[in-house]
Image 1 (cartoon, helix red, strand yellow):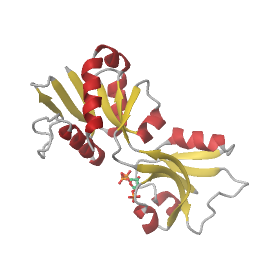
Image 2: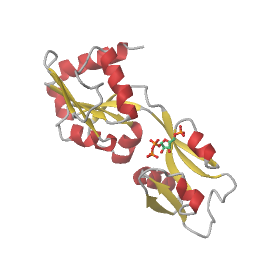
Image 3: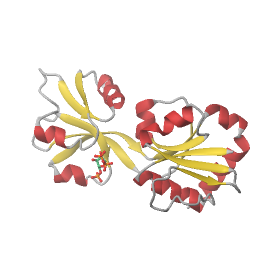
Length: 207
Ligand code: PRP
């Protein structure tokens, strides 16, 4: 059997749409309910919704053979999995942003305060710049941090840029282009290679 971890939420809906188009349907996924696990007996496949940040955990530990995870989460957690395919959905950017009229690079004399959900990505970025930072880890609504003076800048996902604009923030730098990626457990990829390669082949055929 092939087990698939899908990220619960907006991105997961898009990814599931790709699986559907590729011919992998699971009864009940589209129904509004609280079920988390869905089976397709005929294909001998099972999929389940997990929190986006947890997809690599399920895949790394082999409970899921494959999964779909945002590149942001892969960059942040650096899991020991194979990244097989760019699914080309959920396209956005990891950016540094700050107040339009604020001291966007921070006062040179003071450690730059960076609010983020991605402390490793932020640390990496600023260590390459040789800049000392104070990381403030938050869970969502990052844009509030510079507006209320909790941080000088944020390292966050920007899709349309609307949230930044509506909060008088602007992009200072782009760290990476992001999208959803198909990942696989390393040993599953070896022992279930035929089935996994067939999934990749079919997903690649979608326009
Ligand atoms: C993400 C991100 C931004 C927003 C960017 O948040 O953290 O806040 O989307 O999108 P935009 O550029 O199109 O405005 P999400 O909606 O996933 O919720 P969160 O704040 O809880 O992370």
